[in-house]
Length: 475
Image (cartoon, rainbow, N blue to C red; front, top):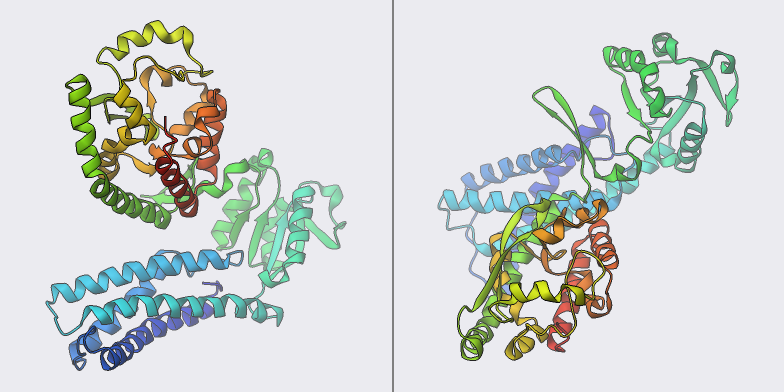
């Protein structure tokens, strides 16, 4: 959690175990009260048997294990309360699912759904309270001089000065900079912001023995990394943690992950936001949203099918290969809104293209059927793609997929719009797509969505899309 030392880590692990255990008992008594006051809505609660106690204890240990697997007990002096809450949500949901599966496999009908649902809610509340308390008590403890760390910086330049200034402004982090190491012998003995330059970093082994720092923090430019290879090897040999304040990753630092795979250290640069919990929620939203939409629109889809047959015969659908997530091909199906030979006519209409860039678009496309205009106005032609969303090939919200001839004409920076799942709607659709005639502006909106993506942003886009569809502002 907040502390790094083994002693404090054990305290937090014990607190998590007790919190999980308390969650079961509080849920049990809440379920009793619910049955007492609302007997018709909530089933009677039976007495907990000995086997239940064993399961409860084991699942409480599971919570501690899950927190550990999600790195909740790792070094997090720079963590945020929001990050703590996100870990709580992940752990409680996983723990909740494991609990349900456990009682299901045991065919235990004495544990009602009421207890389990209440348990989920109570667990979230209790763990949130616990983590909030620990988050605010940890800085208080450090201000009292407990659990502070002596660290040495390697570097004396601007980055070192910035780091010193930041640490001083965040005393609650519990870091005490006891000295600096330099790459210039002439600087030894001087001071940087009141902190003495102890020695050259080539003498790191001597410093580790005499000063005994708990961590080494490197603040020099990556251009000089080859000069400090010995520093890393000596610190590794002596078991001293090394941290890096580097310019190497640039602006994509927040999307960098480091894994050890069969002894291989793998650094991954993700060009889009990575959050397993948010991705899970987004997928759940896609499944639930597409199912609801298919149920609501099924009568309209039937009318659309009949309308197309009556107005222009078969086929009902228009399908093509589009390129979505990671530029992979997916089959796109829409209700046919154009004449049957629309692709042949398109070639003769290319000089009339009103969109600057690789995308073809004209306001009054002569290929569109009269009935097709109505389908497009209310975006009914897009509804078959809900099947693709349900299958996981697309999302409700995301950049529009690209056709092959469009993708081939993309500029390098425009290709990043296909680094996430394509969707039925996105910022372009809800921000005046009829008024945007430059593909560069369209792409900038897609990249804005990618760089600022969140579940809340998806919800806002979906709400705006519903309003646009109801007002018949589609194209």
